[in-house]
Image 1 (cartoon, rainbow, N blue to C red):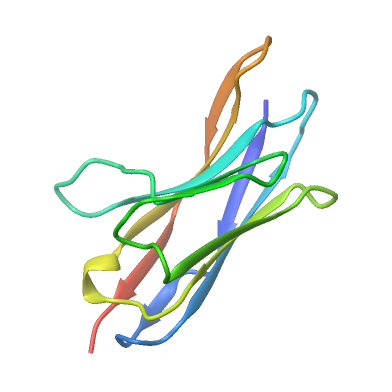
Image 2: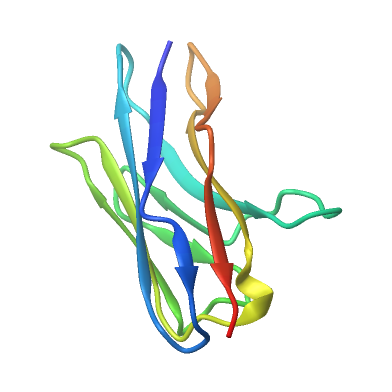
Length: 118
């Protein structure tokens, strides 16, 4: 099955930037979509950014203009550039890889902690 490994999280002050990476391995069938889903304590995991294999992107309103998702198909890696970070961005960020065509799949990484605090 597909393995996803996230990296790049950390503790930062408000207003600074971080870049998260998610590397996919053990891929047999092409991934259609990859995305980032932060989960704060006591809250549900919610999509903030996604990108298709064709490069189409989608963002949650809360991060538009601050976060940028990109994808290196050759490296099977997706990135999330997070600028102007706010305390409310604090969460464990999970990477997701999904395939909508047969055989369908939906895999998650182990998550990386992002803490924004002064």
